[in-house]
Image (cartoon, rainbow, N blue to C red; front, side, top):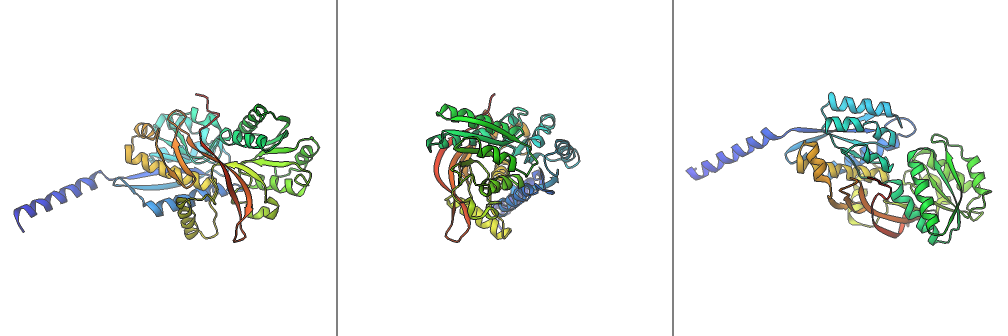
Length: 387
């Protein structure tokens, strides 16, 4: 071997040694619901993370990324705060993620500021959340972002009088306010505003009020899960559709419950940021890998929120490693192609700017029910963010 070759080998060895010396395991703590009636959230988050890691690996800029999951059992602020403290202090996580419900996200805001750790919200959709901490970023949606396009579509479709029916908590109130304001600006009248207990699945009294209100349409918002399924089922089974009362919503025809709703769901119209049937090569690859890793699963808004959330964390690690402050600054203005379409992190709100699609439930050629997108409102920011 020549002196030049020996020198090259030595340089390569030194380079490798240097790289290994800098590499570390970067832990990401995922706080969500993995047990109880709302366990679907944790399941969807975890499966989407599996897909992302399978497609992109678990190494970023020479560092290994490890995900640690914590179950908080549903909307439970105290449990969420305790989980975050354990992840930050005992596990030494450098990024937090997950947060299916608004109270769970708000509870960890002081901790993220104190530890200077970025927290990427995969779902919780109240606009005011990101004001609670400069370290919050969100890859899901807000209710204002979805409800205003829904109201505009309802008015455009001929609705004149509407009843709003929402779950009685912050996201529901956001949805009620955003829909009502936009619908009235477009010439409509909101004849009644109904707020329903968050944990109820008995909607018969509320359905009767809608039926006798004189409205020609109902706008509904409930968190994805048992309540959403029960409300949409009650709408169909109590004759509102037959009475000519149109349905407008957001996530009520979610892919995880649409099969159980059956053919009665056909024709329901919603405004949303993701459909499993979104027509793009990236989405088809995402859905195919999900079905390969987790047969029988269906991709929904929680899935794409987690998938893009991990994508954002990988991008922040590439840009800033474990420096939380620099990572958040680097994320502002980032844009990329998602399974849902083009997305961008608003540098002011740190919330995702994205397309909102008007969809109708249809039956696919293979007999499954899908949310077929037929209208696009492009590049919608968080319309409820007030800095």
